[in-house]
Length: 365
Length: 192
Image (cartoon, rainbow over all chains, first blue to last red; front, side):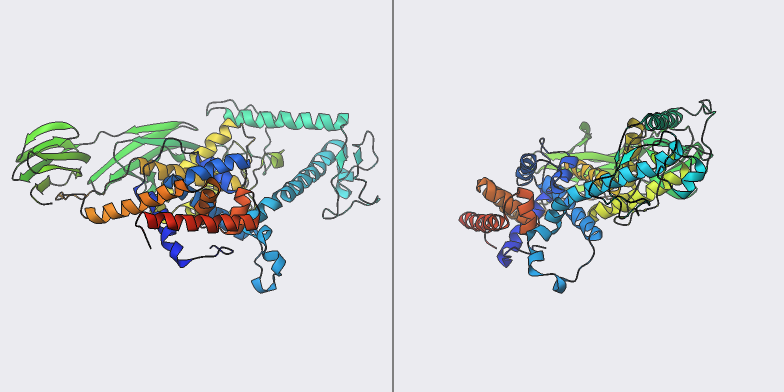
């Protein structure tokens, strides 16, 4: 991994300890957002801001782990973007720092942006001008404007040799588009169509099909298969799996689960707790349907040797032995306290099938 | 117009290059396409210990993207880089959430045992980690940055790019920083 570094085997254990810090770490309050870490790794922020992030990860193990993750993704992305080159064919000069993944990306970005800009301008010329300014018959022969009434004037870059034929896309040089009334009108029409499409998107399920001028072509974004999704949200303090027709949709840990619009018969399951219930919910488009689940109660028996006072979820419930205390299914914090043997604390899962029994020997270390 | 509304997913790391949808107006096939793309991105970002929750994280990522699409009123362009960035942020948020509230494995009918099963080992590990963190913070700033990046697995070339310094300078910073770190750890009785 560290090509270019004088790797000392003695340092490997240091790196291992450094990486393992995250296992026991506590999150700090001043951690940068994941977006900032991502941007720092990808060299997409100013150097002083990046150095702040690096300073932070040297003392925050959780953020160091996040940094490592971003770096791995960066390398994977970089490896897939770059063609594989046989190392033996690479000249020594090419192995210098600028050819390494991160620095290579750093140096390549302006070229990429320039290429994207060229592509964007070319697409604009190809798509907009023929539709707005050139009769269809002519457009089939030459998408670029030929002499016609009020043509769009395009001035070629002086570097490009003047040609009468349309240059091939690969050889074309980005033209500079001069604003003309036609182009302005075309742009305004495009903006109107975009606004109309957005309005349709934002309209609720009962909205009028506004849309007298609705584009119903196969490539239309708002065609016959219009938005059909909604959400369900399951409010329950323990993790539940959500199934529909025996297909796992997700779990209650997820804020929202995307489903199709309409009636859904959901099965809410937690195998460990022995809980299974069926819920029916109607989901409207772009709406979140909430499912609230009241957990049933189950008995728990507690005992301790020689004896102990017992607190459950911070509430004192008495001294052992306790034959049965009813608790909602799911995890509960149980604390045993003895004046001589100290305190034992743990989280116990109360389940539906059978009483949950907890026993502890306070005398054992 | 349709082409203007299409999102473009370039053909990087396994993402569909053909995926296109109306920005802000997801249809059923589009959502399935998006779900597939996001799922691949999340799974490639997700650390192994979190892999069981990849489906949940995918849902969260989809929700974020669709929220963003709505707030952007359809002007958001979903590049593969954006999908990976969202997947990464969702995964890191989940890691932080778990660090903040560590989960304790639960066994039914458990006989409670002390969590301090091997206090000696835990104490030793903690001391080594504390010593390493302490020694790192005592290093000179530039060396600390270089050593931190080195310990995170970056090459000298990457370190020079990240710190915006020359290759040779980055190499020296790593070399001298590691020497200082070793000396400091030795002083604290920690040796490999």
